[in-house]
Amino acid sequence: MSHRIARTALTVLALASIATLAQAQQGKLKVGLMLPYSGTYTALGVAIENGFKLAVEEKGGKLAGREIEYVKVDDESDPAKATDNVNKLIKRDNVDVIIGTVHSGVVMAMAKAAKESGTVLIVPNGGADAVTGPMCAPNIFRSSFSNWQPAYAMGEVAAKQGKKTAMTITWKYAAGDESVAGFKEGFEKGGGKVTKNLTVPFPNVEFQALLTEIAAAKPDVVYSFFAGGGAVKFVKDYAAAGLNKSIPLVGPGFLTDGTLEAQGESAQGMLTTLHYADGLNTPRDNAFRTAYAKTFKLQPDVYAVQGYDAAQMLAIGLNATKGDITKKAEFASAIEKAKIDSPRGAFTISKAHNPVQDVYLRKVEGNENKLVSVAVKGLTDPARGCKM
Ligand code: PHB
Figure 1 (cartoon, protein in one colour):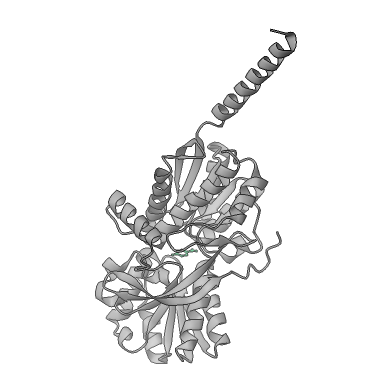
Figure 2 (figure 1 turned 60 degrees about the vertical axis):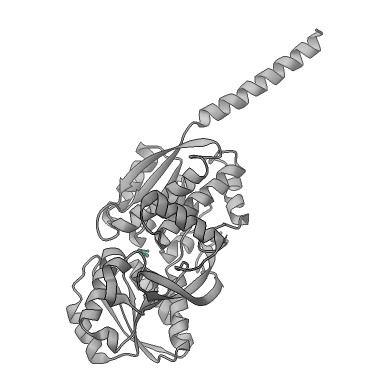
């Protein structure tokens, strides 16, 4: 063997071992799940985790060849603990990526920490407009919605129905405030008028005094943002006060998603808008629903879909970087270019990293939020204040 051939062979060997070493060094991908595992949003956190894990299992339990190690934190939907909680994941556990969370106030603290540290954050629910607005960043993505999106669509629908006056009622925090603002924008553009905004502190569920006020004012429609345990209680109280017979209660679909078994008769006939619905009846959604029900002995809801799609987005970014999430620009660019094959219907990601998606009008029938129509096609959040 000549020296030159020997040297070439050695170089090839060296390169091959470097490649193997790099893969070995990648090791497991540490995924931080920061979700509510206690409190009014517990079921939402569980559905997101289930959806995420289902997507990973469908990919053979690995993403871009890397096994997954989960680190879980219960954020308790408590903004006061959010910075400490997210820093545990970033600084103590050194996670590669964070998935979370549900509550807008907690999400904003997570986005701030992610922006500072550069850690990839995929938000599988929390709609805080700021996250894909003034706080937008190359390493922050959302698989869910902005609070503005389903709210604005409901405003348009209510105005088109000929409703002239609306009262709103919600929890006093970012999600409630922004949901009400989005509804107002759509409703008033269509000629309606929001006459009064009522609020209770999060996560309180004492609605009686406010229901009395609604009954006295008799608006054409009531728009409401509540979710999880709070949504169950509110919809039941609204019906128990007899208001559902005289003043239609509408809202973003969170008011009736994952809650219908508990709400029963009180929710029947309610109209809501959301980026998911029962009865889409597409092969993609049917396959997802069957797999989810089989794995978890539960029906999926919008939260399960958002968790599932967070994993799909992560997989897209990792596949483009051969599992190396530190290649931030390539990771982001792959997700920005992708058409995400979601059970809700395919969607793309806006420049601000928020889904551009159809918003459905749904009607409660039995235990289903049955698809009525597409309220707004390809709705893009205005991303006010995002410079990216
Ligand atoms: C939010 O805080 O952004 C939030 C919480 C629960 C939902 C939707 C939005 O169902």
